[in-house]
Image 1 (cartoon, helix red, strand yellow):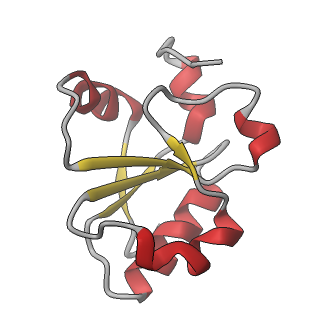
Image 2 (tube, rainbow, N blue to C red):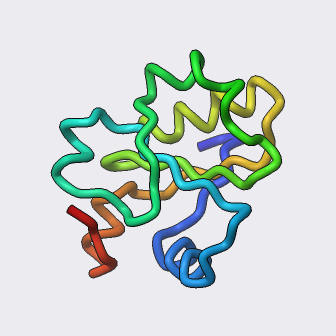
Length: 107
């Protein structure tokens, strides 16, 4: 998508191996969707809640948003970018692509 930075599942997996403190992984799906599986180390912040919680996000960190297929997380990135936050990334293909690549999904 135009103006939105993306990261693919392989690159994200590589970055998460080092357990960096400066990366925040945020799942923008609903709690019911998250209950079916999530990427380990992520926190749940449903898309509709982000405008209410933007002040609670540490925008000095790199924030990587993901959802089921990448559409909602792209919206989250667009919103954050519109608020002047530049270090946000969308997980291309969402958790579907992550799982299809055989990467771990936590219960």
